[in-house]
Image (cartoon, rainbow over all chains, first blue to last red; front, side, top):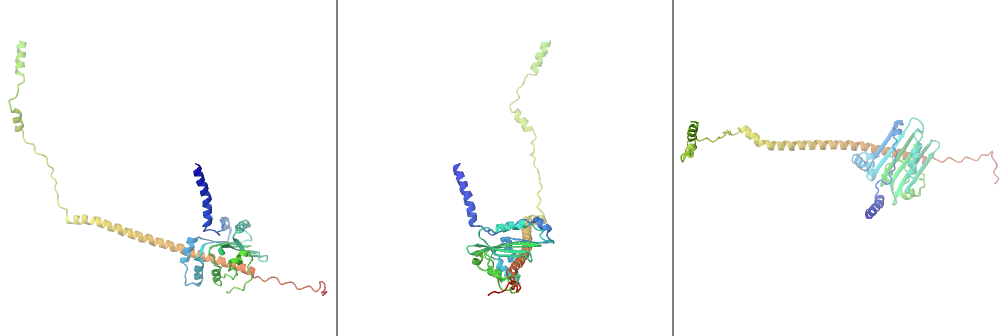
Length: 198
Length: 131
């Protein structure tokens, strides 16, 4: 009986330890359901692409289309893309508590805020976080809240910010100068960069 | 009188041994019973029936194989169609996700690159330069 209890205790300790060692979903945020918001929103975008669906999507991208070719380069190294975006007819129709809950997740070790922009004029908040692991960006999170819109983007995988830069001018991705993990790890906001090539 | 009659009757009805060979003679005199034999007419099958019988098993096998192949092809085509639909839907989602990401990064870019408010020029009415 004692031996069984010992085995169980060892198993209970070993499983979480092993799970921490190999955690494919590290960097994945726990996004709330936002079910009630979807009804209230005039427009909503919900994208849930796990590694399997992402692989499938990559296979169906058109290499001859420059936009899709760039996306294909990017998505082969990713393991998940999760997007929630809601647009409303009235100001602040969404609960800020949900967004604060997600911000709390980003205060966990490993996450660094690379951009934190607050505009009183436009009442816009944009935060960009990067999860750095062994000197490499493993996950990217963007939280954007405007009076009539809020969006959460979570991209997981070996994020090559150079490749993200390659999208510049294609999706309108600007040059954020966040290409090195070191800079992101400092937690300092990105410096000013030249105007995007559009 | 009655006794005499009884004695006569006893004598008349006394058991008498049969002569030797009586039983064999009786059995030999009986008519012989012919054994019952069922007669079944076995006709050779007609050539059409024979051919049908010969071909039934291979025909069933061929039909089963054909059906299995057709079913497999149909299921494969359906699976490929489902996979294509799922792939195209995933591609649309991926492109939409990248568009949203780029828009939000653009927003961050604009916020970061917004020119800082220029310092206000010194008000000449306020104080004098004593240097």
